[in-house]
Length: 371
Picture 1 (tube, rainbow, N blue to C red):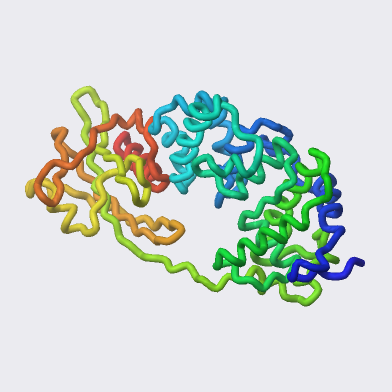
Picture 2: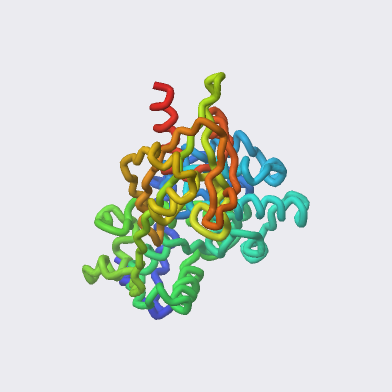
């Protein structure tokens, strides 16, 4: 058995790459739709979608996105609304905005061809070091290591890395160790298997809680496993402080004489939560929502059950306030001026980027209205 690794940069486990590559080829994931391709567009799209998102969720969005935007030229030519509509429900919407901007830069400044090195890829909007490394390794066999959250956890445990990953200096140190662990002069296929193996190990065995160490191909090399301290790594002292907010959503409906149902929506401002997406007007209190309407309409508001929605740094309590309007009016801002927005036919909601909880609420509301 190889001696456990140390976190000093010396005595790194020389067999790590070989064991990981062999394991990935025998037991790793191999049937995902973005595998077995050297097309940078498809690899890039999958990597962006997979950031902080479960594979099972991405599997629902990835084929639909490719069907609508089969190449970077099609994506670059799309409108922001078209992109946001397809991304709706996937969350972390800045990814979609960066994705669209990146496609435009690739087409306008690189002739529609992605750069072929990790260093050059990082110059593109929304592509960080780990995403760039994944594209370069999968598509061009570049000898460069990914280092997303799952991989940092794998390597921190493997090396019993004591650095605080809340600090950039520790992140850079672990990145350098990741580079030192790469296979020596790998063939393209080996680099692909190694990179995919890191992803698979972090996603399936070396998980945040209850890691399956007994099934791990590098169990004998893992210093945290040897000392029974897997729960200590990775070290990250900064805790996430979540804010709790209550939002009051004015959900205005109108059905005309022909039976067409419309809802009043406005585009969320940037920067901020759900920036660029469409949403009913949001107020910070029930009183401010009521103040946006003529007094005669306030008593017609129907308050629905609140919905809780969790974001990375916030816990939102959403209060839907339903108002059926006889006319196509617009609510007012605090200064009395009409809010910017538009009436949208219920049948066209799918063409607009909507936050996931809002889409669900509107779908439920329109279904009840039909009944």
